Amino acid sequence: MSNTPNETVDPLTGDESVGTGTADFDVDQFQDLLNRLEGSKKRQQRQRSVEGRRDIYAQGLAGMMGNF
Image 1 (tube, helix red, strand yellow):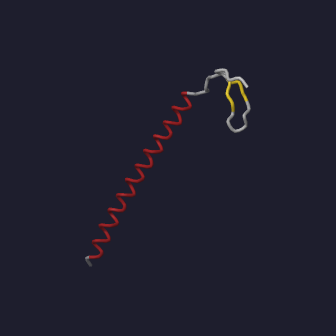
Image 2 (cartoon, helix red, strand yellow):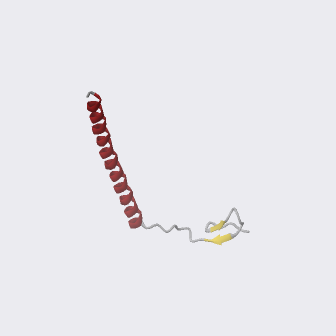
Image 3 (cartoon, one colour):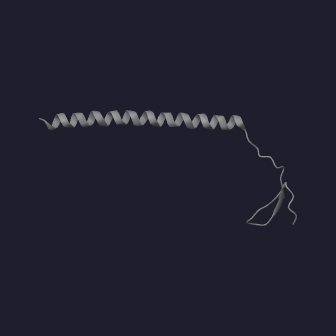
């Protein structure tokens, strides 16, 4: 079992495999996923803001009704 720079050994099985030493990485796909994540975070924040305003309105209405 020789360990050359491009050769890897699976620690679980002990199997050797020869790799190219490069990782496949699609920058466009990564950017698309990042944009989707940021958009999702913005929508979630907006939804929290809307729900917060509803809660404030409901608390104010409940306070007014409690005065009757």
